[in-house]
Length: 166
Image (cartoon, rainbow, N blue to C red; front, side, top):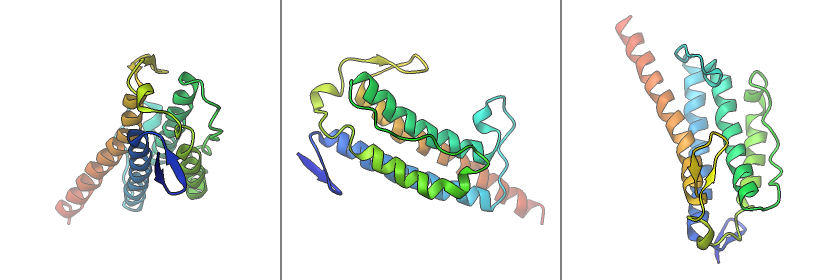
């Protein structure tokens, strides 16, 4: 058994993914706040998750919630009891509290899952792509990384445009 914080994990892989998930959600939040401070505007799209920085924040935090709920469902584990984040307009003021709750609820549901349950079988996700648990954990870690990357590019574009406009 491997320990992180006060949680002991049966699987090193699960432990690593839980730790990396927290790390990259935190990094996304830093970049999101930089984007907000620089008044970054998301490009127009039909995707409602990209309607504003606030909806993108809710998208990333809701997805983190959904990944863990899905894993618990397919593994027939108890509901992790992760509440929904606030609606987009209110979420920035409540982010710290929600993220603390999210991390707390993410740390323990998979602690007793062994490596033998990580790669087989595969289960259809809510969007119908098939994932084993290991792949969903990796997807959960990559999701905030991808959105932080997108925001970093928009920040750089805004800074270049600002310099060019001087």
